[in-house]
Image 1: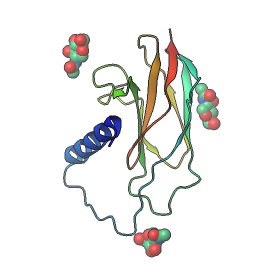
Image 2: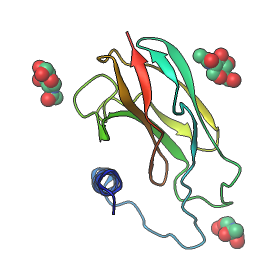
Image 3: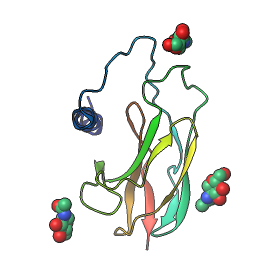
Length: 134
Ligand SMILES: *[C@@H]1O[C@H](CO)[C@@H](O)[C@H](O)[C@H]1NC(C)=O
Ligand SMILES: *[C@@H]1O[C@H](CO)[C@@H](O)[C@H](O)[C@H]1NC(C)=O
Ligand SMILES: *[C@@H]1O[C@H](CO)[C@@H](O)[C@H](O)[C@H]1NC(C)=O
């Protein structure tokens, strides 16, 4: 199992733990792991600007386990935990994962070419690495 994926699973388990006794009746429910379309490799975003993160909803199952989406950022494969846009301060949350897009404001982070957007629905899905400039 790749390191980012296991990290995601741990964080996802943590989310469930935080939410508490969520009913885990997964019968007739399907996991939906949407593929992020934008940002993609080669995307350059400027800190502070607004952009739409977009993802593919064409293969969404009829009954998905969790329709609530959340977007956070990652740098060098690690999700932020204590910066603007971190897990404690998601860039966007509580939107429907079936929307296919959500507008976010790029956090004021150091410039770099190893940033990723992480979209949570049923599971976490990393975008390709892209660039943030100041
Ligand atoms: C979706 O859920 C409904 C109600 O729980 C159920 O009747 C239906 O068979 C499910 N459909 C699929 C494709 O799982
Ligand atoms: C994001 O998408 C919405 C809906 O299509 C649109 O109204 C909005 O202008 C877009 N935002 C940006 C920054 O492109
Ligand atoms: C986050 O980092 C800043 C700067 O290092 C620090 O001042 C702050 O206490 C940290 N916050 C948390 C919740 O750890």
